[in-house]
Length: 131
Image 1 (cartoon, rainbow, N blue to C red):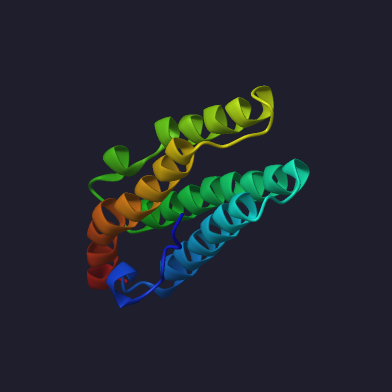
Image 2: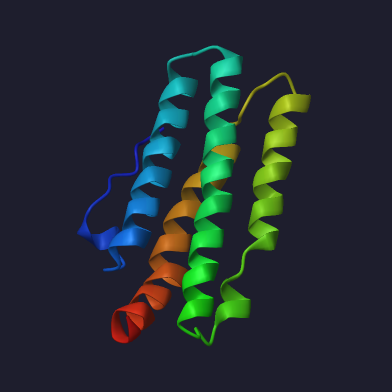
């Protein structure tokens, strides 16, 4: 498993959103390292819970900004499906012997990078213009 490296390519040029993303990337990397290093299942569970909690908070943060600045793609950007997928992954972890597969980690990695590089780049461009 590889780390996601934060660099300028992941910046949406809105510092408060970039801060959220840096935290999400950091938690993703902690999670993957804890799996590779064979940390205790309870520790991995705690990291996964923190990642999910931060993801939920991040989406609420973005929603607040979208509402404040009348973002036209608000409905498209909202992420209840994504949150439910994260919660389903957490339940799978809890119900299947507290193991995450490579596919589970790959899902999280793809979600995080695509979320930033697609949806949030568009949002960031908009916010830079109106803030």
